[in-house]
Length: 339
Image (cartoon, rainbow, N blue to C red):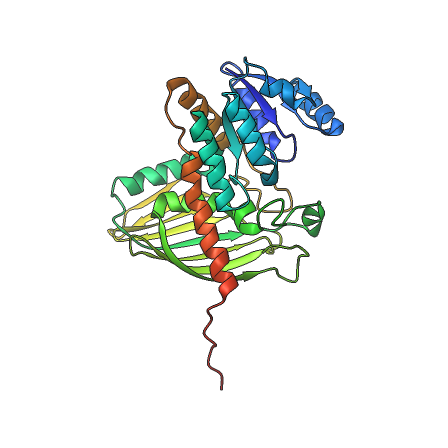
C-alpha cells in the first residue's frame, strides 16, 4: 500500500521509524508540511519524499491512506477531504479538541466508508497485551479497585510554543494531550466509567491556559472503585503506573513491566524497563508499540476489518476526560473539619 504523512512536527518520529521498519508492506508516497524547515529536516533524516502541496495528496488515487499528525484543531476539514477522496486515515490522538467535534470526525469517516484508526499505542505494548490477556482469562478474578498515576514533567518552554496547552488548539492540558494514552489503556482493563469526582487546575509551576494537574475518585460501571492522578508538574517526571486490585490477585503495570501477586502466593513478573516520554524529552520512548499499531492498521485495511482502536473506540476516553474536566470545574467540595 501507499501512504502519505500529513504533519511533520514532534510526533512524526515514531511513525516514520515504524514506516521504515514496515517498508516491505507500505511505501511513503509523500510527507507534507507547510514549513520548509520541517520538510528539509524530515527528508534528510528519513529519506521520504516531501511536499508542501496538500492537494497533490488528496487528489492522488494511488495513495491508499494518510497518517494524520496535525494538531487537533486542524483535523476535521482534513478528515472530510481525505475521506471524501476515499482514503483511509490513521490519526494521532486526540480525535479532536472536544467530544462533539470528535464525534463529527468519526461520523465523517463512517459516512465515507473509510477506515479510521486512532494512535493510542499503549494498547499495543507487549506487556499491556499480556496483562490484558490475563485479565480477560479471569486468572486475576474480578476487579475491585484501580489506581492510575501519570506523574509527568514538562518544562515551561514546552508550553511556550504557540497554542500548546490551550483549548483552541489542543482542547485542554495534561488529560487530553499526555494522560489520554494511559487513560485509554486503563479503560481497556477496567471497562467503562460510571461517575467521577475530581479536583484540578494549573499549578504555580506552569503558565498555560488549561490544566496541568488533575486528581479524581472514580466509580466504574462494574462497581469497582478507582483513583487517578495526572500531571505534568512532577519534576523530573516518572513513568505512568496502573495498579489493579482483583479478587484473586493484584497487578501493577509500571516502568519495569508487569508484576502480578496472587492471593495464593504465586508471583508473575514480565516485561522490562523502557522510556515513556515522562520527562523533559517527550519523545524518549521506543517505537515498537507504534510499529505494532501501524501493522494492525495495514492488516485492517487489507483485510476489510476494523483496526484495534477505531475512532468510535476512542470516543470512550474522550467522554472520560470530559467527565474529569467537568467534575474538577464544578468543585462539589466538602470542606475538611478544623480545630
